Length: 319
Figure 1 (cartoon, rainbow, N blue to C red):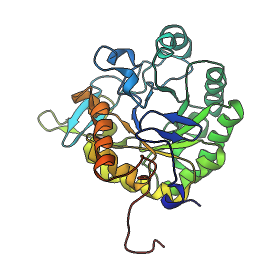
Figure 2 (cartoon, helix red, strand yellow; figure 1 turned 135 degrees about the vertical axis):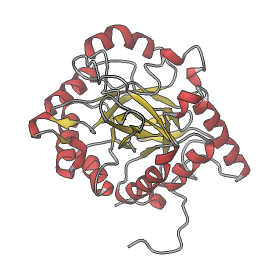
Figure 3 (cartoon, rainbow, N blue to C red; figure 1 turned 90 degrees about the vertical axis):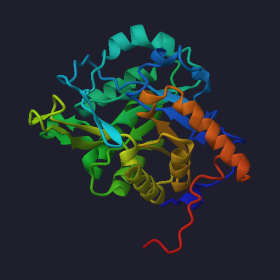
Figure 4 (tube, helix red, strand yellow; figure 1 turned 45 degrees about the horizontal axis):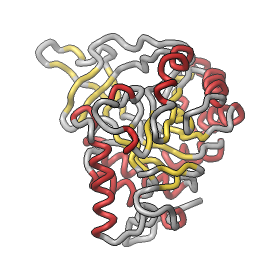
């Protein structure tokens, strides 16, 4: 198994990073679900300044999502229960892809399904599409053929879905893991063995909020995914654990608002980071974070981001 120390090696100079076979101009990626299809932010920031961008989740057929209300603010974060609403593959290819091809940074398409066959079909059809860097596979979805069990919840199931997708495509695969599991290291290792090129984590944590005046849930779906600064300690812990378990690159996320947050993830073992909820309060969050990382490298005399990755100092042996 790999460690942060083994993964740390010479890489591109300055802010650029190597994520497997891909080279990014900087390690800051706009996360899925918080950046639409890129066009929504094109008038607010120069998209070419991003290290990368992940599209809103995509399924084979259109989805209407959950009933409103779908968002609820919480202390230190937010809950969302969008329900993976999306236009479906055909409309995506017709209406969304032309703009995505123009974005001058790495673009991943986030995909999800309710069966192994759906994942494989999506991957196969998108592998023939030019203009995308790869796929981010959201496995935090219920498997309708396994009584609704979450794909991400069991190492054996994770291996099955990732290896099935791997057989369907040669595209770069970044597998996005759920934090709602018992042993994140075993889950990540199963994804690596199944053929993942990189791991991204963490997805949102399951939570809820209640309106005490009406004694009703604040979300129409009752429960939803918690994101924002409140989940950063959990994300950091899981990235550090996964860095001990796998040899493929890790993309860390969860509560990243500032450059300091991103730097913690890099030191814990992430090669790159994704910024999500922070874009709702500051559309320029990713750009400011990249600038802050650059400043840190200069002040602390790191030649590149790779020399910082996995540099956490611990005072005891990890058993």
